[in-house]
Length: 637
Image (cartoon, rainbow, N blue to C red; front, top):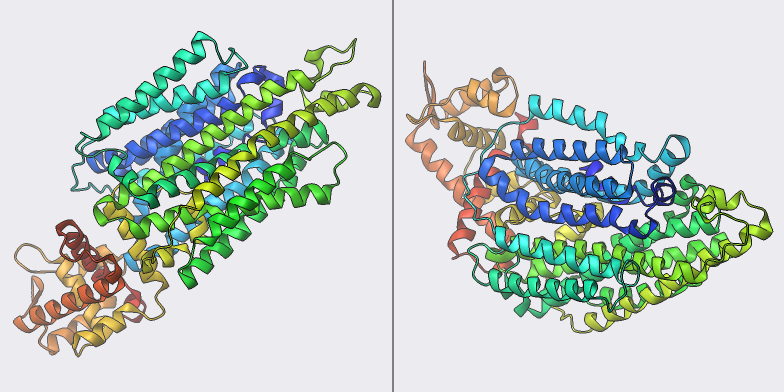
């Protein structure tokens, strides 16, 4: 997951050097965009493929795709080849992001899963910080190609461990895959991205190619809407847009993606061409933007978790984002480093204030049946915003650079393709070149600034609604920030399970002790826990052995013997040569425990108001089974 997340941003500081080596500067935005588009499509598909064919198999296929894309991207001899294999790498990355999370859910007990989800979510925050810096280190000390080659040995190690250690778990779900909808939105998004990246550069905005591509993309979007209204399990149900909350949140997510990836991708051009920084230093100088983003995202998540109020954050955040983009348009060749850092921090702060709100609000207003598609829909729109942000920033850059860049007579334009070459020139010669790059970057951010005003206008229409306890719990801490970056599950069951595990892991008291007390069962916690394990390990004839419990828990069977013997003495279990089985008393007590667990879980989800919905009730029963099996009681056995 770390590798997949890193490769969203690791190329940003390497892009100027890539363009110097491969040419094709007008297409540099596609090095990022092709990865994002492919990643987005795969995140929609891979969850359902995992349900159909097994998550371990899909995980391994994703790793292989990622490695193939990484190897050939590093081996590229042209910009076209690099873009193509970045798309292959993106397919693998999308698969890794989703299947990694799903595998955690398969192999980690529910009671402990919140910690692992927090760690997995934090990976995305780390990647956002480390990506540009690592890209710069590779460029300066090895080659930009090593930004891709570094994935190979680590990926091979992942395959070895996964083959040996991951269990093969097949889901009982049999989802219907919306192939037509996915194909239509992929073609429409690609077409619109090409329009925004080619318009005014490769072709005039009024050329038949651009107009035809724009019309075709709009037609594909219309076809997508029609298909989604008839699909059995649509990728993005159109009914979601009847909700003002979802529509506003979707637009805000789009804007966040637009500003974040657009800024991160093109800031190194200013830092390297205008300031003369090395690739590594440009990664370091982008840290104020990331620091502003992470700090305000943490403050926002924790405040929302504590107060349940959120509407103020997208309003203030959109205004700060607009100011940040405008401030960035004032970056000049002689701007002081501290002032530059303040400008970046303001931009990052605006993004961080808005970033978490869309997911939190949608999770609190969506019914269980739409929870998966609504959450993944918000993630989808954010990634689309990133794709369009990179493309539009790139189009502005490619349009403005020829207008502002003045190459002195006698200087070969090809000889100043790299930042190092520019700053190797005498001061009088390089001054107009540096000024041209600075003016281009200024105009790029100035033209992009109104997107913040659009977000502010949209945020005005976001209503303040009561937040569910599960969403408030998920908003707090580093895990909340990470979840804002991460690709969510595409089904409601996995999304609700993720929220429940967060609530359980953050509960102040051990749920096992609380449930045992409210059940009225007069048993120690470890004995109640072992009853659940005996039930889980029982064969069709109702017999379980401690050896089977040991296999399930990876704890030597002898550890459980004293507890099992105590249950036999109390009349809850019977023992013979075949193993242990429930007595009538044991079965009655276990039933009491199950009911108590279910009541406890319903208390945690009381603000969902869906206890009578069949699928929701089945999910509760499944979570109850998981909670009975998990817990801290192991440490006391």
